Length: 290
Image 1: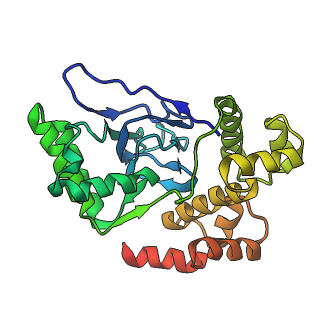
Image 2 (image 1 turned 135 degrees about the vertical axis):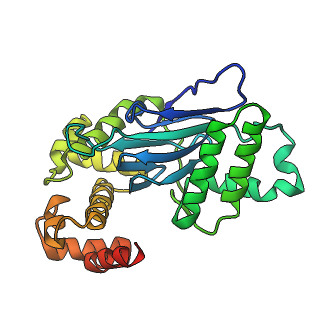
């Protein structure tokens, strides 16, 4: 699975890029770039793909994606005609690891930042109360100008490097060196799955999307992603179930059916295997922590 190389635009007077992204699905494809990407989601939610990690994302999430790590965020449909509904947007920062010079990360004082950026090569998410402070610092990077903008980014990275509320995303063994010719096919599989995961997907139909017979498709998907297609589908469904449980608008049984399962016992078992908690306990623990 070869993601698309994305060229990140810069202003002539900037050593790194920072912007408010008001078009939520502008990079709605599996892609990568040499720059490190730091993103703060203000509005909007959906499914996040970073390396071989799949999870739901939402407002307040802060994610750092390392150099050349494939990723994309698929925003859910939103209806601006609904009362209180706002268009998704985020703050995005792109920078090279050596944006302040080749020697910076080799300084003893910068060791924690260097280690943090190495960790980000698997993708990391900042959680808990630290995400709130990180959000303030990201906004500071956006608002300041000149040399103060560079200082603000260093301050932001230093804070995140010292955070104890950092979770790594993709697995240690994840590899992403794949032929360019597979990019279009794997994107078609991803998009088809995201559109249809709430119903039963037959292996034959998704294999047809890939232009293969089922047995060949199974080997193909496992070879290029490191997981079976149905493990991939399960990750999407359970991630969506977690989102619905947190929203607390549906019963656990309703959540089961909404995320594509028709057997509650099966859903209960798979949910616990992946999250380590039952659906009800997951829901209750979130309510307690709010």
